[in-house]
Length: 303
Ligand SMILES: NC(=O)c1ccc[n+]([C@@H]2O[C@H](COP(=O)([O-])OP(=O)(O)OC[C@H]3O[C@@H](n4cnc5c(N)ncnc54)[C@H](OP(=O)(O)O)[C@@H]3O)[C@@H](O)[C@H]2O)c1
Image (cartoon, rainbow, N blue to C red; front, side, top):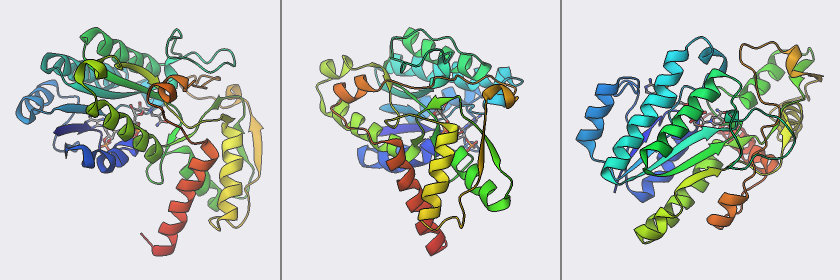
């Protein structure tokens, strides 16, 4: 089986490159090899490589930049996704795609279900929602996986920013306490996606088709960014990655003026994915420990 993986250099894409390898031959073009905003180049790549499965971990993910780079956000998060979905529909192959808690407006305190109404607050969320709608309109078989608050041991993310700031400064860090979600470690998400795909690919096609749809998939449990930062510092100190726990001051979203609004309630209800695929997801604290253990080992070995 030939698997086309897009965004293979990103937080999630790196983990997927490893986890998809046992399922088939993974073709993961880099940005230099294929600019995903180039419609003609993407079409040519798809025609030349004849994949049996498409997995899209690529996106324009810079939420604040998207406010002023609307076209780029739409190109990657809507039109490119539409192109993949139409190809998948025409060739009767599955498309695995990732979306976000930012498709919701963050109202209320109840975890969002897959069927809840989407009302994104910013361009990024609108562009991701447009991608979701394009997949549904194409009629392709899809796993459309909405996740939240992704991080990894490399790249740019909240966890690594916190560790860097804690090492650089002794002044209290101001962290938002009124946004609630589930921080999700990209390799954990990728491992679950591998399990889902393994199950799908073993089923008779008519049975697999019935599982096509949207799934919420993130770590279990919820916290605020403030609680996440507190846990990062406590665990990092316990593991010897930090000498001292950084002092933190709670602030509200409105005090942290950013170009794009963020949803306050980013909780995702993961019952559907757990029941459908008979999976047990792990908690956010456990996922954090796993990531920090990796950082600790890399610090020891210098890798
Ligand atoms: N990050 C989060 O907190 C979060 C939360 C919820 C959902 N999600 C969703 O989860 C998925 C994975 O997110 P992530 O954090 O892993 O993303 P990421 O680390 O920002 O990676 C994005 C990937 O897309 C590639 N890409 C972007 N524009 C491209 C272009 N024009 N041509 C070729 N490649 C391009 C990047 O390539 P380069 O390395 O060359 O830039 C990179 O491989 C996305 O669908 C995202 O919307 C993310």
